[in-house]
Length: 226
Image 1 (cartoon, rainbow, N blue to C red):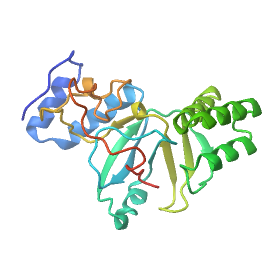
Image 2 (cartoon, helix red, strand yellow):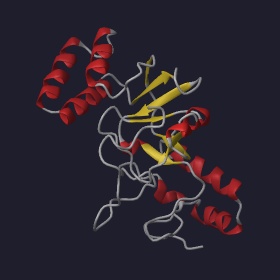
Image 3 (cartoon, rainbow, N blue to C red):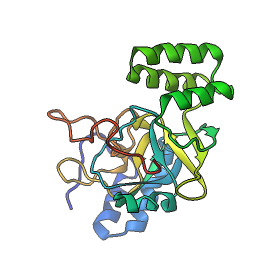
């Protein structure tokens, strides 16, 4: 087993790597979840199902959706075959009903304004940004939610199965909860490197120095519940 040692070692890295070498998946998993929560990724494990291969979520519209394992599994009939667990840096999500088509800007904007989740001034500012470009509108709606103290969205899933689903607004809020993740060289990534707060890669890795790893095109990489 190759181990990745670049960067400073954390207090649990040695114990974790020993568990990986010994095949003790339960011990490795417990250390990963503890490290995630210590780093602020407190929500989870939650699940995402997809047939695509990528290491950073497309959050250019409303964000990335996560839910129960049952909810993620419900999309297997649509060709999304791989289920993975994640931890999310979400502490205060805005609770909403399931509005159905989440990546419809007009619908989400109208719902937030109508129910007072954003102020009239915020709604006007967000709309002005939307008129400039799609990307500016989505960035503005997320900024308005953060101004109100929300760092994500939670909704009662009415399509893929009972229970809450969650939307992470930014890719940097998402980290893999798998017991083992590997870096670009195939080396096991220790917990001290997996939960860096500012990187989009769900393994916690900084961007590649050369060409970026392939990521599905914008809006072509679906969320697990939509």
